[in-house]
Amino acid sequence: MSHGYETGRLNLPFVGISTFAKAPYQPDWGKIDADVAILGAPFDFGTQWRAGARFGPRSIREASTLFSFGHAGAYDHEDDVTYLTDTRIVDLGDADIVHTDTVTSHANIEIGVRAILESGALPVVLGGDHSINIPCVRAFSDQESIHIVQIDAHLDFVDERHGVRFGHGNPMRRAAECEWVTGLSQIGIRNVSSTAKEGYEDARNRGSDIVSVRQFRTMGVDAVLARIPEGARYYVTIDIDGFDPSIAPGTGTPSHGGFLYYEVLDLLAGLAKRGQIVGVDLAEVAPDYDQSSSTSILAAQLLMNTIGRIFAPK
Image (cartoon, rainbow, N blue to C red):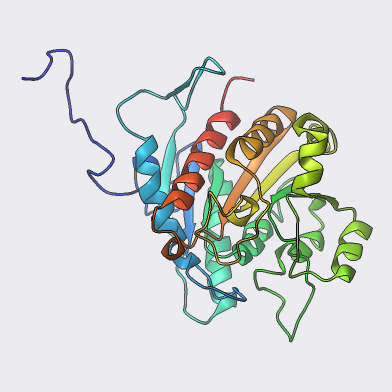
């Protein structure tokens, strides 16, 4: 017996098609009419060790259904705010990936991000390995300048190694070369990195601000935010290995000593108030290494809550 005041379907998380947040699917990239557009970038040919992030977009979408049913918006009792009440989200599906062809695959990702920007929506890109950030940042070439905020265990500032310039160890170096990128805040960097000492020196010489997890915890979130230029347009790039592998084991290059959930959410919530977040990508979720799905759930939860903070009343 159902209650008379409830109509329509219950639409539980395990029912239906797994678009991101069960948002409408929009396969026509010329007809994007939304506040947020989700684009999958299932490319993982840039990895240097364990592959599998090509399945990241599917796993994040499936996990996101947990946060998308039953209620109008998402009420947070600590903030006393109901997020995502009027935020229009569409899912564009995935950029076409051509196996072994990095140039074409990256170009197809860039086309998708450019279409989102032209529509006026916020691009949120699901990787894939972290090289997918390269075409995402390229897509901003005819936009106003951006400051990149990176959450990551690794600096990703390799210029070239054995001829490789567009792998997942290169994206922040490629970003630093872009005229429309005014600076980088690289947060969570720790332990042994794919970037050698010369890369760290190069990054700092180019204006990067590098903060480890231990330094972040010593300073506190407000002090870290104070180091990021105020009132800027921020592009946020998140490597899931920025989090500790105790909560995010499903990634190709886990690094112990990482962030916990609220540390990163509080940083991004503060960033959304400090300036304008104009793009987001989240990379390196590789679900085959995580039988509990906690990594995919973490990624979906972080993205949903970040989108909520971006579009919350200021």
